[in-house]
Amino acid sequence: MRSLLRVASENPRVLLVTGDLGFGVLDEFRAKCASQFYNVGVAEQNLAGVAAGFALSGHIVFTYSIGNFPTLRCLEQVRNDICYHRADVKIVTVGGGMAYGSLGVSHFATEDLAILRALPEMTVVAPGDPVEVEQLVPQIVARPGPVYLRLGRAGEKPLHQRGTQVRLGTPTRARQGSDVLLLTAGGMLPVALEAAGLLETDGTSAEVHSVHTVKPLDSEAICRLASQFSIVVTCEEHTCLGGLGGAVAEVLLEAGIRPAFRRFALPAAFPTGVGSQEFLRTVNALDANALRALVRSLISLRRSQSFLSAQP
Amino acid sequence: MTERLSVEELRRLAKEIRLISLEMISRANASHVGTVFSCVETLACLYGAILRVRPDDPQWSDRDRFVMSKGHGAAGLYATLALRGFFPRERLNEFYVDGGSLYGHVTHTGVPGVDASTGALGHGLALAVGLAAGAARLAAQWRVFALLSDGECDEGSTWEAVLLAPAWKLFNLTAIVDYNKIQSLGRVAEVIPLEPFADKWRAFGWDTREVDGHDVGALLNCLDPEAWQPAGDRPRCIIAHTIKGKGVSFMEDDLLWHYRIPKGEEYERARAELERSA
Image 1 (cartoon, rainbow over the protein chains, first blue to last red):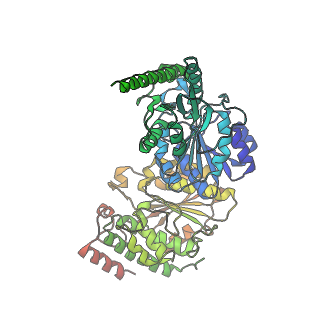
Image 2: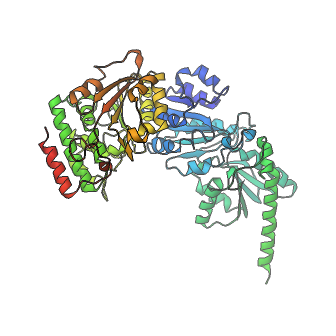
Image 3: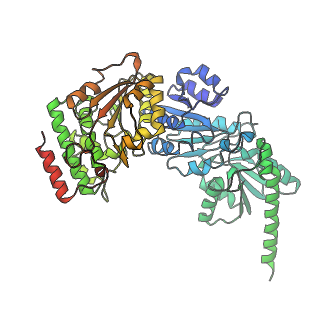
């Protein structure tokens, strides 16, 4: 939000429109850029339509709400009014994946990447840490047309090293390795880095890239990276359908690149369990231990396959 | 800007819009002739006298914005735009046909004079609210008009926008409801009654007038923001009482002509009636 405040204070055409959410979070923006702040009330269809109208009158509009509300609730407005008009509307959601923990399924954004990715003109961005957010927001403002920016919750730790350059549209390397490639979207970056640390104790070297720009996917970079590794795993707090995993699989298969490939994601079902995001990740096999186990199983599989193929 | 047409000229424009859109719809085997005919006088008044637009410069930045929220009335809007010089009349042959360039629902891409694409009902008023609020914050002089169908007043999203516009004091916004009293599967009064309709808009905070939507003189008085400026920066709502299929006796007030394609002898009879009309 501070990144947005910075952009808005420099450009009076940048507006923030909320669907009556953001208690505490939007206070500073509201105080410092009062004339650029709008609240349409609890009315997400209106949020999307009004934002499109603002954009068509020459503004760059950020809409803000929780996970599914400014996206799925008003999907047709997003498609027809925002995307078809190539309106400069940047949809910002908080609570990506299961960040809202105990609040429940209504507040889990676990199909959003797939659904928003399917919309023409829409750019889909799911940053992995605050370093990425800070550098991506000005680039999102500068990019014409609709953007979906999926955030977690405030308070995530910076993961990238100081001085890391983050470019919209290009994956950002968070860890160098040689055996396994982990590609992450959004809040799975810390999980993948933790898993990479665990794998190191197993003698496996994992490289981790944050694919914050899920669409348009940098297929050239994905292919180049994937062809250097025999094992590739995509990681996302999202169902296994149509998100980063689907996007990467589409690209690799068409390019004829065939590493051992798995989607580390939620099953094609609603998550189970009540509890914090951390707890839910464990219950739903989406934590670092589960990722480590998946990678180890792929390594064993790979070994047995090469053993078999070596038999006369 | 084109000059403002007289009441007599506007009536003639309305007649031409009916004849041309009838021909377009018939040739293209399209539907929605009834919905076009109910809003023809509104379109004629808007484009003939009210809207500050420049057909030779459709993207003129200070133009008034018009959102045809009832996007299924596209034939009427396209005929109006062609007659007012936004594009050549021959282009209307490209309506709704294989290899054409004009969709059956209002589309902005590649169509001079159209700012907003519609077709899914209940979208247009929110777009218009955003445009009007955008104009207000830019202190721009242009005004925003949205034409809604009565059927799309079933949409919750319409009422979200109805609720918001007065709260934001959108003095530069006018909503016109083409109240022809027939929606997709029946009479409005039987499907989802809207009455007391004008009172609903008033209760939401709109300065609201009811008018005979086929009376050009009365419509002009309502539509003209110079002639009717509500106190308290309220947005304006015009409930235009209209007749579906207006102008052709056997189409008037008949649900069938939401769908039926005027062909052959029916087409000829309709055309003859329209040509005979004043």
